Length: 308
Image (cartoon, rainbow, N blue to C red):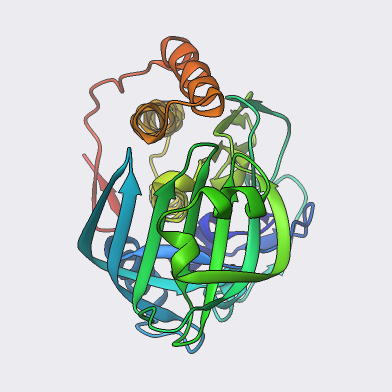
């Protein structure tokens, strides 16, 4: 039984379709992300799960320009900008009314342990004259960071952390020259988080009910898909047992620790101001608390199947 929604549960439901009956409970609602940047690996995984090679609202990104630690570099980049609503459209599988007592895969549940306290703001913007429509930009300023991505030949989305956008744009030597923000879309917490309890005797958390990632690393959507794959693979095993669920939780804890290490690299190298030192300090303090190396296991994923 699926409780809630989100990409992880959508993947789990699709991969269980045809294997078993899937019930659904509504669960607490949440706002959809207005924009997601999915890298090529995550995009192909999404296509393999849902059989959707193209999305009408998606926009391709071919280049990435980064100004970090005072140095500007340009790289080829394979990604797609799309709203979460468009990603989830058409992914639902037929489900029946949930029956009492079924094992639940939960997409939203309980409090999280958060590392730090940090919000990001989201804005709809437009590209300035001459700015390419196939590019995303990432910049560390004195007070925070700014990310922008083209969503068409003329439009863009902007995400920023560390202060008000006007001040960050005033410090900008990259993003401010290519994008102008026009309308605020909302704010959301961006600090990493892990559920205090990931599973119980009759339920398991998946996606946002288990982990929350800092968008600076671009890992959240891909990890949610992989969580849904692993949960569905365990549920398809007729010999599933407690050890398999222990392996699932073990991998998520290890994945969270790796994410904290990746975040620390960004915040250590972005800037030297007070805000940057605070973010890096909180992450450094958390690494020891959350250090986790997954145990050896006889099971492994081959495609969407758990073998071993």
